[in-house]
Structures are given as C-alpha cells and as structure tokens.
Image (tube, rainbow, N blue to C red; front, side, top):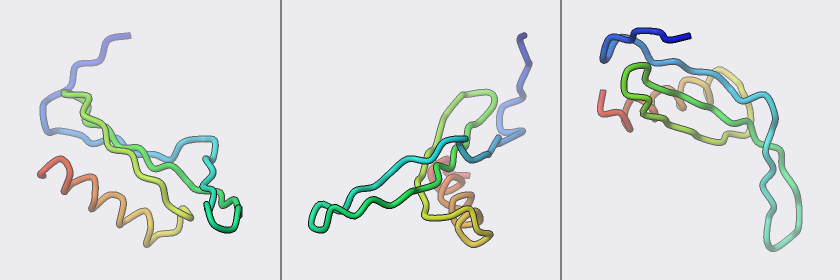
Length: 72
C-alpha cells in the first residue's frame, strides 16, 4: 500500500523486536542491547542506535540524537 508523506511532517520511531548482542573483546562478556530505529516518512532517511535499555532516558537520548542526525 502506498502512503503519501509530507516532507518533514513525521518521524517514525520504535525499537526493533529482537535484541542484538555486544561482545567485550577483553572479557568475552556478552551484553544484550536494544535497537532504536527512526525513519523520516518522505525521504526514508534512517537513524539506528543501540542502547542498553528502553528506559525513558535512553529513549529521549535516542530521539535527540536522531533529530541532530537529521539536522532538525
């Protein structure tokens, strides 16, 4: 289904369903990370960031980083 998007109108945000893993090269410790994804509707410009949690602070930081990346 085709959806018309107005440039600069919406930034779609969500976390990916499956977690990724980071491996500490020195200790071999494996840490789960949440994957934040943001996309602009009209241009399809995408921003992705991994965080340790989906807590409010991490979510807000990811949104701020995405807006800075989009220069918005």
